[in-house]
Length: 451
Image (cartoon, rainbow, N blue to C red; front, side):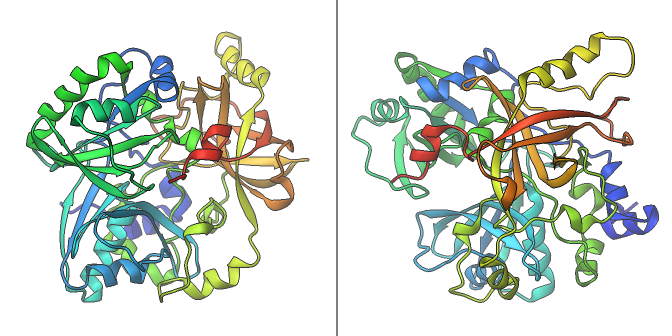
């Protein structure tokens, strides 16, 4: 039997919010070892020595080739494509016709006419649909993450080295000084006799490279990295630590995609309901559009360029001069976090379980942020940074509440409790929080994108 479409599920349940809040779809899966040592030491490594992260399994690759590849990407991306030559990459951002965010992913320009879009499947689904209905002369090859792939290994291995010792480790591996590579530009190494492509990157803001190549060569490349890494304090980081790296660089991994208007009914009829993900958190508006954000709300204003025509351009031009919200970090009050954990050992209904180090329990985690009892924004990801000894969330707040030092409250837990498998019976609590810059870590704010 054919899988139910998102639109059919909405019609059956009666609302988009109802479908997403009770969705049985898993929050997200990182199909690698949870820990190789322990997640605290693994977090520490990307600050003090060098961490190796395996990104081979949890992301979706959409390979785009053909005469209309660049036109497709330009038509649906807010980014500039001027001078986007092979060997470069960018954080690709797509919006709907009203300028509201659909999703983002890393876009690699591998060769003339060949692109690789890497990330959560949200944007890959969106582009694939528009290829099918838009008459673009392109060829798509899709490689889903290892949880969803029908069979076989990934097409590519993908490893990331990050930390202050990443560069000297790579110089030992390659036997020569590393070339100067600007942020989000690519170079090539030879490791274990194999050609390795490498993106100058750093998920937690420290120096590093994301390296990739054919899956069949991955084990030999990995073995060489591990053999060379001992003297540089190399630590393998598992899924638990990896899932928190974005909290340091302030990348918000998911936001509810703005795909629920009448003009996108065809897309929802095309999209399987289990392709989207679940909605969790204390915010429980019946209107799905209340969950929408713009690129400006979540820190992507700098990538919006009006040098080309794209879906949503006119709306973003209107929004550009009058942003309503800003991305911030929220530092949760330690006493309130401890109180929530302590409630698990006290009589009565406990607070929602806070998992460490990443506390999100839905693909789209949306918790209401209050000031003086009024909602002033949304918390969109949450977890613990051992390097800072701080429990923080990434949020978008009204501008008059976004100044560092402002005191707010995060509602934690659902009222009423949804039917998601990850939600146990619990009571909603208020957690005091203090607004801080995003990125929260000073070194990351000052050095993340330096060339």
